[in-house]
Each structure stands twice: as structure tokens, then as C-alpha cells.
Length: 86
Image 1 (spheres, rainbow, N blue to C red):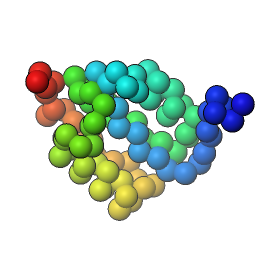
Image 2: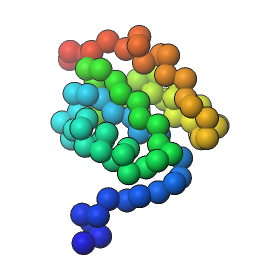
Image 3: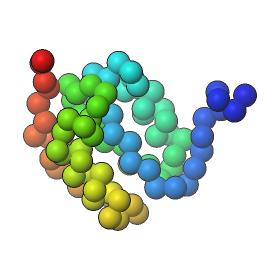
Image 4: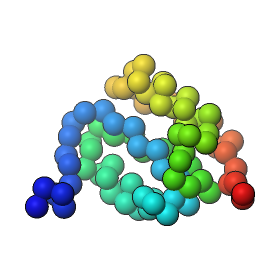
């Protein structure tokens, strides 16, 4: 029962999701965010699972979030991301 029951929490949470992620599908990441009322969901177009490891923009978002978890993160760098075909 515990594994299938979604976690609900008021803790500020940053969720980074690539819409080309096959490990944690984008729709699943969005659903997770719906159970976390103080979450911020950041979507990366054309990016797979390792958003934090591959994008400096994602690392910057995480650093800014950790500095001020109750403030909205500046997502302006996300618009500059282009899909990678490797």
C-alpha cells in the first residue's frame, strides 16, 4: 500500500522534467507535482532524463531554488534550451 500511495507534502520541492524522458515520463512528473502544493515544475523541451547532469540551466535553477525555496525560480534560461540529438 505505501509504495503505491502518492506522497503528499507541504515542503517546497523543485521538479525538473524533460519532455523526452523515457525513465520518468513527463506526464508522471506532472502528476507528482500535483501532490506537492508547494512544488515548482520546470519543463525542458526535447530533453531526456538527466536534466540536472546535462544542462547548466538546470543546475542554476537548483542552486537558486536551494538559496530561496519559497520564492519562484527564474526559468528564463529554459527558453534558450534546444533539443539534443546525440
